[in-house]
Amino acid sequence: MKVLAILEHNAGRLHRMSWECLAAVQQLASEAEAALVGSSIAELAREAAAKQAARVWAVEHPLLENYTADGYTAALEQLLRKTTPDLVLLPHTYQTRDFAPKLATRFGRALISDAIAAGPESGSVTFVRQFFQGKLSGDVRAAGPGPHFASLQAGAWRTDALAAGSATIERFAPQLDAAQIRQTPEAPFREAERAVDLTAAELIVSVGRGIGEKDRIPVVEDLAKALGAELAASRPICDAGWLPMERQVGSSGQTVSPKLYLAVGISGAIQHLVGMKGSKTIVAINKDANAPIFEVADYGIVGDLFEVVPALAAEIRKVKS
Amino acid sequence: MKILVAIKQVPVRDSPLRVNAAGNWIAEDDLSFEINEPDAYALEEALQLKEKHSGEVIAICAGPARAQQTIREALAKGADRAIHIETGNLAAFDTLGIAKLLAAEAGSESPDLILTGLQSDDLGYGQTGVVLAELMGLPHSTIIMQVEVKGSAIRVKRELEDGWFQHISMPLPAVLTIQSGINKLRYATLMGIKKAKTKEIRRVSAAAPAEPTVRIEKIYAPQKAKQAQIFSGDPKTAAAALVEKLKFEARVL
Ligand SMILES: Cc1cc2nc3c(=O)[nH]c(=O)nc-3n(C[C@H](O)[C@H](O)[C@H](O)COP(=O)(O)OP(=O)(O)OC[C@H]3O[C@@H](n4cnc5c(N)ncnc54)[C@H](O)[C@@H]3O)c2cc1C
Ligand SMILES: Nc1ncnc2c1ncn2[C@@H]1O[C@H](COP(=O)(O)O)[C@@H](O)[C@H]1O
Image (cartoon, rainbow over all chains, first blue to last red; front, side, top):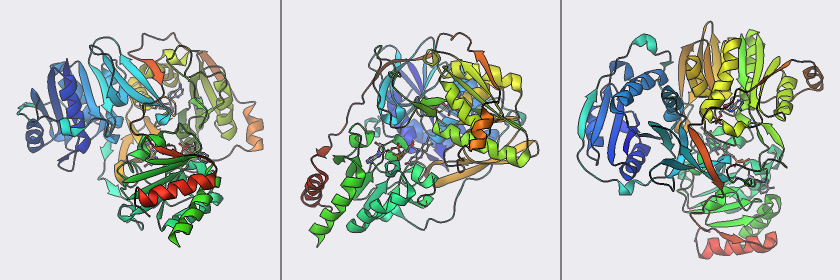
């Protein structure tokens, strides 16, 4: 099977997940290829070519200097028509979310997004992905002739298996015209400086939608106080304005790795997990024994947080005094 | 400004999920359903844009008969009318198939703007809006946290990873996939609920599904990578056992 990895790069660096994607390609392909898109990417192509693959395509054009969905789709469509891979893999990043479904549609295919493993069957294109925000898994199979498309979840493929090598670098100059590119992007920016740096916190108590209403947040806040921990939250809590955005942990918030991360009423969707699964010890309190958060937790209590959290705060105060 | 909003009906959050007899989806018989969360934000954004620029908000939904309840709720919140693409077998369509159903109806409306949620809570493919844009030949942007209309163009704020953002401009008509939290959701008023009863829901039956290019073969409980130590018993006992472990095993206290 000929498999192509589309590698993402930002600010002159290959995205960490690009390496995971290349590792997946090495595992699945009999003929592995990688592609990079940009305007002056020779250096990055050399870096990628130091890994085992048949070739690395440097898809270069001045109009590809900044990412646009239209530009990337047009350029990659031309590359794929030329190279005809059976399968195209991409890291499941925000950029991939933006253009890969469009690219797949050009080939009459649906993208298998956010895959966590290659499927059990060999000889066909099957991937495992999560449904219902991680509460169920499913085997998803692509039918018909390639190219098929799949994007890979952060951390699902390990880079320690990535084999070194020396791939041939080939330049590919797509035909692009400025009128084709309808999006005009501006420079990325960050909102005002964060007043709270959760990345420095050693202990974090994080509250999720299980808290139910804003007025009950003090229940969890008191546990944080008992521990001497920072208070953090999942996205819906910040979306609702119950806690400020700067306390959000996850793919669109902060990435933390404290000694202790105590998740209260948080289900454990992947976008939350990527922000905290590097924590040394993870504790989950959730009334649903099947909540995905328990898959990454070291310790857990299954129960109603309004009973468990006050009891836990009391026990902590007891051992601390 | 004519704005089309794609809304999907999904099982109520925290529903107990059981795999169906065929093993390839969930058993839906005893579940309650609601609007997909980001779609509620997309609808709210459409309503706010209409309030600012005047025009019309049309909700569009592909789903079985029960989806009508969710459509009525959208009308009660302020959508002017709705299109219900009826199919008793949504699962027979892959994303491409769903997007084709939506594109066929959206095309005949010629909207200025189409909003979808960025991702469905059940399938979580995160791509229907982008596919729809491609099928309709429209520019798009995803994971949108702000929309500014500037004459015949829009400038949007797109969310990037790790708290980064980016502004992107593009001409109208366009498709945007809306991220949760972009605005503050409104509740339907009693007046709105009453009015909704008289609003038009145009029903069309879905075209027959094409052979899907991607198929769900099997659904199952996730395999656990790590075995958490679970403390049970009454809250006080469980809490005491946990504190003991945190102190002496994990040594974080
Ligand atoms: C592009 C994108 C980016 C995102 N970025 C982020 C991000 O940065 N951070 C983030 O957190 N999310 C993010 N999300 C959202 C994410 O997908 C989930 O929707 C979110 O993490 C869910 O938050 P939650 O666990 O608090 O809520 P829910 O999923 O609603 O879970 C609530 C949990 O509380 C439990 N519960 C309810 N009542 C009780 C009780 N009385 N006692 C104990 N437990 C109870 C329930 O069993 C459930 O497990 C993002 C999504 C997308 C698509
Ligand atoms: N059956 C449907 N009817 C209407 N809109 C839908 C349907 N399926 C998906 N969508 C829209 O597409 C978005 C993304 O869905 P998905 O690609 O499944 O994650 C949703 O948030 C909806 O706005």
